[in-house]
Image (cartoon, one colour):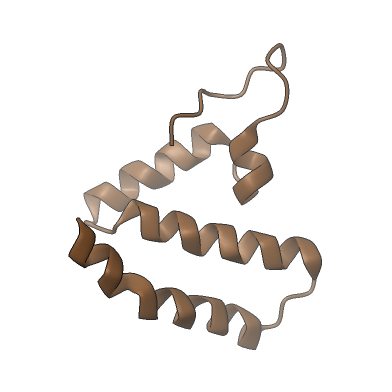
Length: 83
């Protein structure tokens, strides 16, 4: 992710539109992921999937969130093999 921090003079924060998370906050998440050796690309996909479903249905139930995380966990070995 190469987005620069949000600046009202520059317009809309693309990271926020895609993930529901400001660019500055996403950098914090990236740093924490690196510290805990979590593949950031995988984590971004998880966050993006969650956010896209959240936008469509504001009242996600636990079972929906569990499905999103389970699906992401099944994909995790692919990210580990590629990095």
